[in-house]
Image 1 (spheres, rainbow, N blue to C red):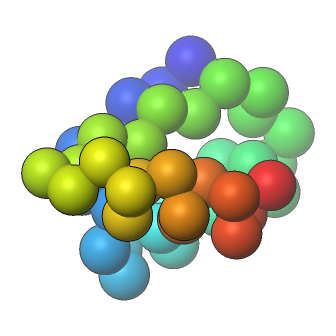
Image 2 (cartoon, rainbow, N blue to C red):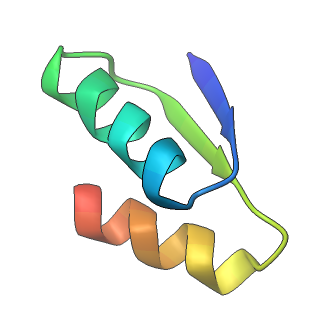
Length: 44
């Protein structure tokens, strides 16, 4: 599992790379809960 603080451009890119490399558990944390949820849905 990896935790990424911030779901902006850099955080989203890192999360996407992790998912692309078959890492199953990625946690996105952001000040705005809805932004983190939206980015997670976009990536999955």
